[in-house]
Length: 228
Image 1: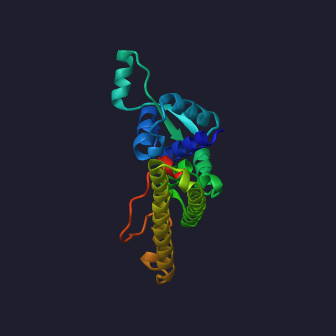
Image 2: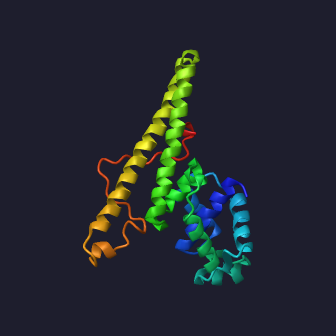
Image 3: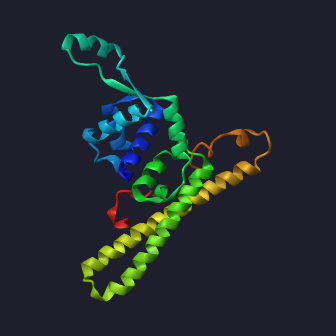
């Protein structure tokens, strides 16, 4: 399985965990909610769905809406296929959510993982955020070293493009610092709450409710090629 196919399967399972959907609905959610997938087509999505069905992680059901049931015999069109997550599929998705290996820090995979942070435990969120930050800091160091070596050979426009790329990475590192600080603050706040209190018993933060941040900057566009 290619890395990009694995990301798509992860995102499809995550969306179907929220509710069953038909293919058009899934593609729309992938395009609008997860910007990294806006270029995906039906030709890419449906083979992915078939693979997930064959693996036992999804099941196909005929659309049961009243309008669809009436329209089908009159028009001769087949009812829309609705995809539903199985118990095995839910277990598999939760296993994927718990993974914090190097793939989770890469540009596209990180964007997909972040989109489902609301379903991810705090400890895993922290490891993914810190891993992503380390990866970008390494990238930034290499970009600075490269720029120092080649600065004299670059024309003004190429130099400006290099600087823009560095600024994009620096901006994302600042954003990650804010997120990590917020996650730590939420964890410390929950730990310091009186035993048995509503604040301690609340799953807010553990289930993925982002704590308030002051002076926060918007997250970078994960599709910005200048950060690669």
